[in-house]
Image (tube, rainbow, N blue to C red):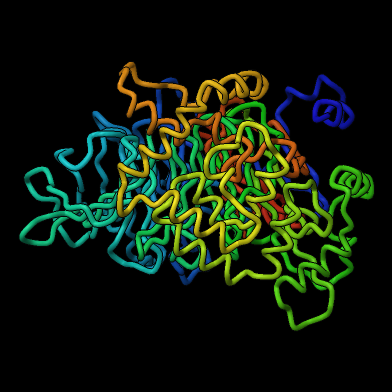
Length: 614
């Protein structure tokens, strides 16, 4: 379908051409070739074996009105420039700061927006050998180095971020699957840290650092199996979403250190994650080539998007196009043809869904309100996709399938009960039971999908929310008797293992789930090992609320899907006047939003340096 769509736009030959503009319902987005940032020589970077190019922005509230600053890494190099965006051409001959590292490469970075001024900025930089550096690229004063001797963690830093609202706390994730909380004021000590267990739950544990004087790290989180690829704080800073190589999205209450909910990829690892501006939805992308939309309130997958032909490397919400409009709900989506397609595809009525949304949200205003979330994704297929998350997906009036019916009805009538269930059982239930507790509608899946998900927890669910909670907490409690319950549920699963294996074999072929991390098992013949591993066996999660089947949730199609680079894309950032992308060759591209392109082209066309036209 996608190929025919692209062919219709300009013939098959154009499919492999690099696009320099694209059109959405807002208008035309245009690539500003003179606003391209890269290494000063503009030579494409040979990216073999190198870490992804990343970009960070900060506004230093400069009096001149040009306060935007950009930082990006290319190979062993790190650059810091004034970012002129759509206003003026980029001057690459004058970086404010440039650093070249030996023996290690920058992998990620983050500015502290709270403390940034025209005279000083705090920039954290993570490295491939595990260290984290705090630098000030304006003052260029001596920096601080954390995990310098690599006593805390020897693996690559995958993500580093300042804790929202804090001038001194920051969080660092590693390829080891560990995350550490640091304070810039504290030292790391000269010996390896000793830890004391603070809290543990389903596939995660949190330790405090045991020492006489306060030292870094303040906390150590161990999350899932394999690398922790990225994390993101919710807009209010209270929750933390983590995506790991084991294919799981895990959302934590950051201060309470408790698990709020989980989701499993279709197959393979999850590589990227982001929050909607209001914190109600999370989008994740990864090795299944999909973007998956997860509801924070309902703790379930509400849609998947298919447009990429390879791994999805970045997902991001566009805060400036995401809108709540008081209008006729029929007007906010794409063309009439698109609307007809969606009506046929989802079999729902938009106008009615708006009313159900209003009653569901207990709105005091009776005027129709249209909600559209815009988000984007870039991938290793060198393509940029833009997506609209619209009302018919968010608040379906008619059930998409039988699996959705009870969920919608029960969530609409008793949201507080659902909320209590989440808090009470999330930290001490197994994966399957946890999802059952979080979303009362699991009973509908158990009854209407008698495929391979008739595991003990599904079979045990009954038709009331209260019973669901009781079953979940009694059947999957880990905190009191962790081994007993693990063995008990494991034995019952083991008894039916061969049956499930037979049932699932053809599904694995259909869905290519044998690529998933869960199939890498140890050679140990120890039965207990086998029992505990079945908890996160991907074949067991398919068809449950952790990972619904493809036919059980709406499948989004991208608004646009354009090849915009020669090398894999590693950056997507939405700014007020433009969106910014970057590829592994080290070119950072600025795309002017509709109506913003004239700001640059009229002034600087003649005097601009010759840029690489992509």
